[in-house]
Image 1 (cartoon, one colour):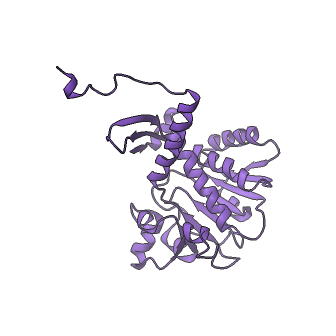
Image 2 (image 1 turned 120 degrees about the vertical axis):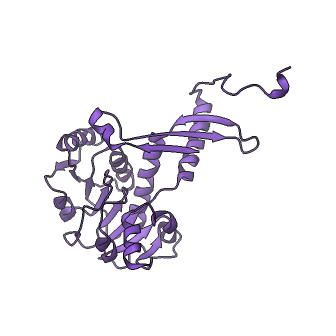
Image 3 (image 1 turned 90 degrees about the horizontal axis):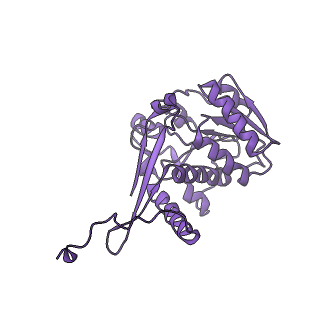
Length: 268
């Protein structure tokens, strides 16, 4: 089981927005076997999925400029994974409504790769104008981007935070999702678009369709494509299982012998 909470107000207290716990149970007995902190796993899995999407969707040569909208831990991990998928990235253009977070993000990126040119911009529009790939990981609960006409032809938008674009924007672009049933709920931008037109015909395909060769990476080479991933909790469980196995091999973690009560048959 994955439990996750999101409290944007934590940022004002110097705390991370999200916290999570993963509990892994035996498939044979149902008893809890592993309990682990889950926010790092969630962040890295989210970022890896976004980087995979960028690799599958983005066509037309190696992207040299990456735009970052929202300068928190999720987008830092996205940046890390994108740098593996696209090692020739030369420039990052970043924006956050909190300018201090954008400056801190710039410093963190310098530690990650000192050869990058990292620019903090005053308006989000500026990064859409120059970036080949833009990753959005914000705390927005309602749409705040109503136009993407300034994007370069063929731009790929990784809509990790799910609620940044207006329905009109969603309906005007090429749309790829991870799972249509998952993403069309909870007032995401894609859900709002579905409610607006009463169908899902604007969703061209899933990421799996592209990865398996069933669908083309883009509807056309010059199309602006938005990838909207709701995220699948079972993927965190898979990463958690791997993490638990590696931790056991290396002797990490703490065994709590008395965590579970003794069997009823032992109480004699």
